[in-house]
Length: 85
Image 1 (cartoon, helix red, strand yellow):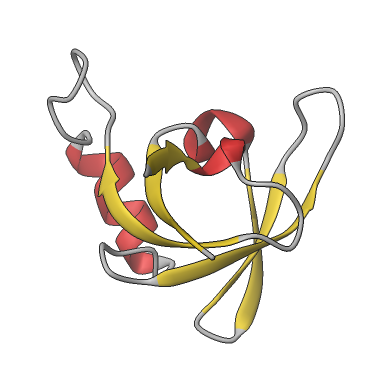
Image 2: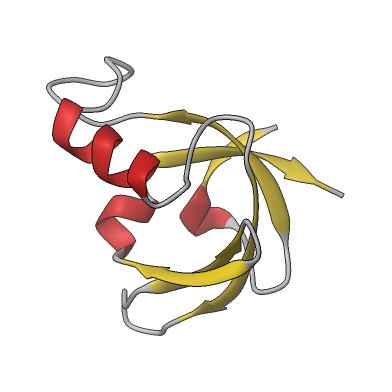
């Protein structure tokens, strides 16, 4: 089941399937956002684990490729993952 990264709870893992941002639903990410995420190692097929989700719509801390990364909730909502059980 494909869900936005923000739907995962602490300790849950998933594999990135797509980045949806830009000028309309499902149009793909804007070039700047996609490039920034790729530079951080967040590419389709990459496994990520939610380490901590800050309350009150704060940032989401994830573990990706062996390091921890905090990203804003708005950016995290545009990253879609396939949930790993």
